[in-house]
Length: 374
Image (tube, rainbow, N blue to C red; front, side):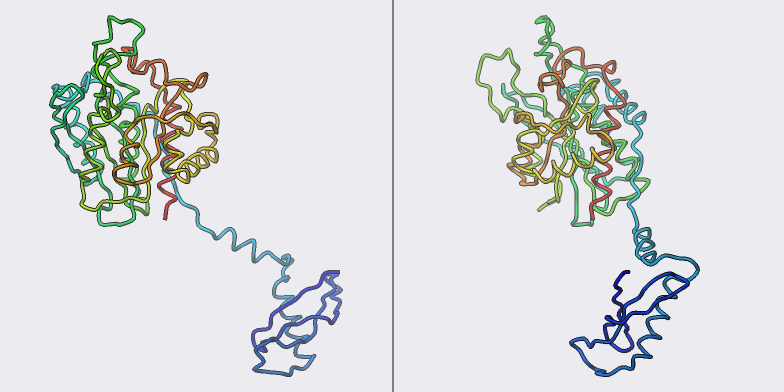
């Protein structure tokens, strides 16, 4: 026997303590009359109370429906966010098209041509494109003609998410096993093009279906012109990520801010995993948690592993420090030792080592995040 308490709006009373038996339903119902704290009506006849209760009971249970079905129906009415499907083949194509320009080292024809391609693609995908040209000084005094490329969606919105990747490539394969290759520029299929390719596919999806928040896709230059390993002079942290440092001090919109940022770096390598990077945990642990939980929900916990790696001098470090936008780094690592993947800064950073399933895991996770922000 179950005790049922029912509100009767027309009398402003709570009914309990009296028992009726409904033979058809094999149910005992307990009811009676007690006044609430607000007593506009202080009396009620028991007959009226019984009629009200019996009517309510049959209205809720009639036609063979169970009590509580209304609550179940309310649950099914809750709208779910429609998240687009990340197309890994599309992202793979955008990576290949960047690699087709050859190395994208600042001050080279391939760099200029690729920059124009990236700006054009973002325009094609409906973004408001801003090119930020800057003369940046490298570790050795070389003047770099750099270009940050920003594609903005809903630029009028104050609620924003920033998505970052660097689009330049390393001038030297200074981590190659063969020392003869140390002065050879790398193609940067993974280190450079993969993050950009993933963001171009995300831009294509945004153009088809806008998320609630404004999105900025920010392609940063001169990330990989940091001091080479063979250099015998001083190795300074600030020699890396020159485009990010410039943007953080001179954002494309005065007073720019974002709810958070996500940096994609080396997100297409075969046999890569993604652990929580230490600076990301220091500056934006809540964003890390959100991203890793989304990846787990999508079934990618085998790639987004629940462990931490050391801090990496990458674009997000300067965005956190200088722009004060909490930003994480989704960066690929070797599952065996947590170090960078074997193609990092070598002549082997080519399309041969790009994996569509890795791209899919990262791209779909980022889409899940940006489309669920309100």
